[in-house]
Length: 176
Image 1 (cartoon, rainbow, N blue to C red):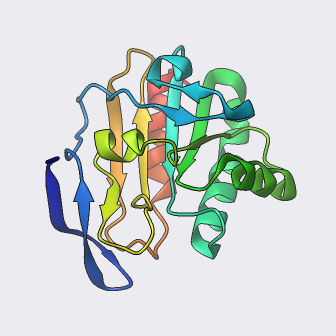
Image 2 (cartoon, rainbow, N blue to C red):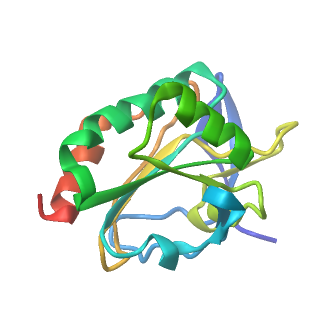
């Protein structure tokens, strides 16, 4: 049985249980298998090479996730190709592509954790006990050497993350 944590996150005021470890700044970024563009199964190594932002959302088909992803796409424009950004959710890859196409987002790649939930389990953000499997709203910054330099697991899933500290951590990790 995987480690579980309760009380760290609420969903509309109700505590939920998270599966996996509580990652901290300085930890090595865990590996995962998630589905990316063209239904390719990608791992942490496939994202390597530069500082990365992992924008983790429950579902792009909800207003807060939609707003969060658009906001990160907008504020990341200034960093150009110095960084890589990924939105991770349990949405199917087709829904993720549709969202990004409709929103005009082309600087954030999608990773679907619907394949085997290893991102959620290994990064400690898989929510257990709801009628559907979703990830807790969170933001991770990983430097080019795969060290985590920023973590925010948003305490209430229905609320947005703190964008500015994540952006500052990403700039620092990228040397920008």
